[in-house]
Image (tube, rainbow, N blue to C red; front, side):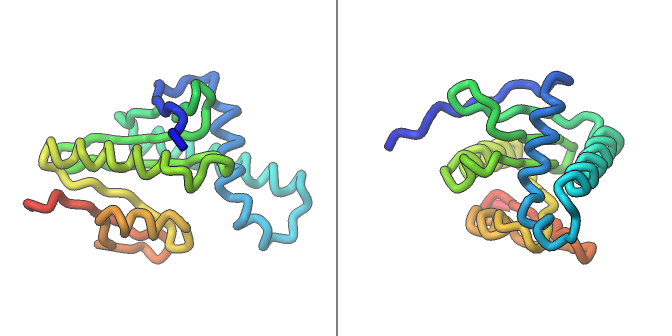
Length: 160
């Protein structure tokens, strides 16, 4: 099967509702453990998404924010920041319907290629229970630090 075309475009304020719904989808399995009704879950996730957005604005002001498109339809987001010593994947998220289809792997490999070309390490924070942790490890990331919730993972070009 030939994969559908994947592209990126800058995120805009008009994408807020899509990104809010995407955030909800990324936390759906986790929310099953909480005794909230649907309205409570939605309110909690909206608050968490607003806090995450504010955090990214404060700590990653130069971050490149992109919407991932498949066949020109939004299916995710990719946030990448570039610092003097590293390329940081701030966030990558996909809607459930396209997870496991190679889109995330393709995009992460593109960031790794950028890291190799610029001779910079590539880093990402990953929650310990995130199923994508295995993907990062397969792509050559290794755990270099933790704060108890997130692992700081690092990839270095093989010649480093």
